[in-house]
Length: 69
Image (cartoon, rainbow, N blue to C red; front, side, top):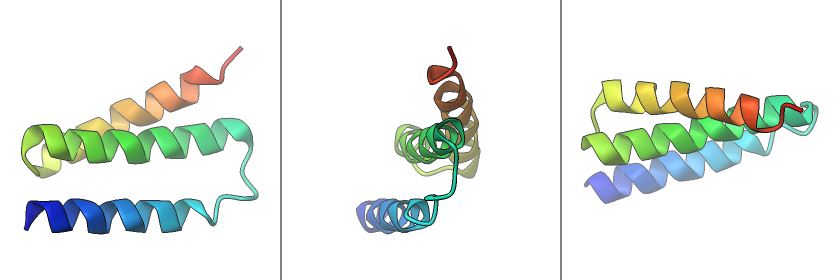
């Protein structure tokens, strides 16, 4: 069940990111970081909402700062 939920979330995130064509590179990196962080946080916390939200927040910050020069 958890594997199916993770795959569904991943597909939804990837589908959502295809609508990001008008974003700047920094905005895109932030969105990708948040998506990856959310999936990783969910996987590491056993599917808890707090782990998912925390992972998304951390991933978004990392994605935002990664492209900063």
